[in-house]
Length: 620
Image (cartoon, rainbow, N blue to C red; front, side, top):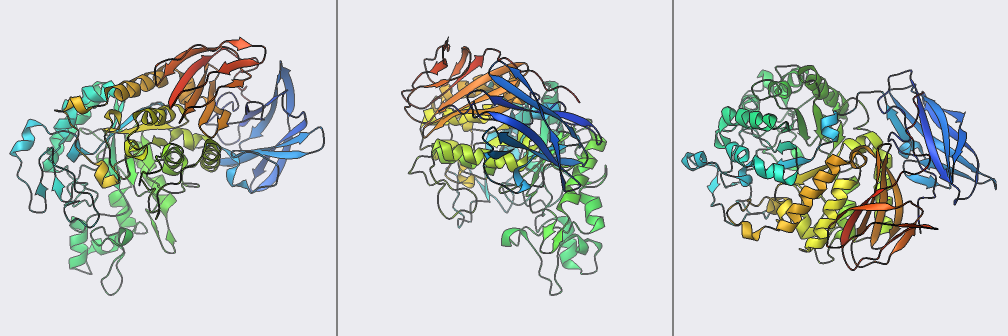
């Protein structure tokens, strides 16, 4: 059954005239209804000014089988929430919110919202991000001359990765990848279609992951030092790309110069940088004593870490490194401890420092749970969208035998049908809001999770379906290095396998081409980057949706298994992409188009003909 007849609104240009207005502006907002749906008698925009509900009557204009309802929304608060009251001719009433059409009263948590704060930079929202774990990506020739430090266990490039949590080798195993190795392989990043290079931390730390920094003032010599980081940044920028750093603002390592001074002397000025109790014990990340938590309630700590050009945040945004922004590790826990919560103050400080030093920085906060309320203001532009993207994709495509788990869950991710997955997407898009969803990262896996190839039980076709969703749903695709060639991994540590540069015969070349094709399509079609999202059809094994923009419309149909065809009330479509052989243009008949059946997992895309009434929302 088609879902396209349902009343629809989202935060894209077809429905909102200005995505980044100023306080006091009036923005035109629109809702689209269809003649095939139960008739609508009237519609009201409901917003909340200073938390008090206000209703504005909307005005309809018909265009063929479509009716557009429009009203002016006054941007009264920095983040203005709104929804729509739909009144049917039979007297029934429904709410249209970010979670969809609801026939009962609901709280405001999933209301649409519009923010008067500046949006994420265009280059970030339009990007394809490529994540590199430096120790496992590539060695330069210089790596062979570096001595293995006392804390580490040297590993050959083809050795198996130690990944069990109780294996002491897991954080100590050092494969010797470095920053010049990344620079030497930027042609591969280009082949994938990425244009933002994001590396996990480059600061010294007594582990292969370096999230336990011993200083923030220099780049680890094992990676090539400051000069190698500057070379990488220069090479990235010479291609017209961007580079993102990775900073842990929640904690340091227990070998960090600040912590060593603080632990040694209760009167040391760095003591207040951490959360010490009177008996000398201290707060740490998730009970790991090697990761002492910093105290963002302390002004001196905030000045040293996040505030101003000489802070850790500021230092690396300046020449010769010119980092274009940060991925903030453990952003959800930063500044939060018991009764203390200065998280938003820290997020604002990070962003303010970045904006003072770079013309268009991008700041992404890691949040592996519910980022609601943390991403619609003047702090993090977006999040690593595990809950709103990764887990629902996993749950739809997961092999029943796969042991892959979401963070902290005691059992593997549940396998769910298409309807449940779409409801999950809707729920998270509703709580995060359109702008934050569009600026957040669509992740199939990272250095902290299982690989998508393992989630789908090694099925290359399902992997390509997952990639299709990653590149075509709202959000920014972030590819963890190796996903594009079919690397596997059952946990985050296992996923940190080395790139097999010298064993290209083991690469999944077809999946690599799929990633490149998807990146090119996203680059060439603004609807896939900035378009709205209308769910078109869903059943157990099929999810179909339209990405719509005033400058183009794309239909995406994803199948996880063999599935029957279905009809949609749309005009003809030109076939753009198929993850498997086959695929043809869609020809319109009396009742619309017939999407063909599929014999197995695949994702297809069509460019749709213009629909009557699909104009850009007028500015108020």
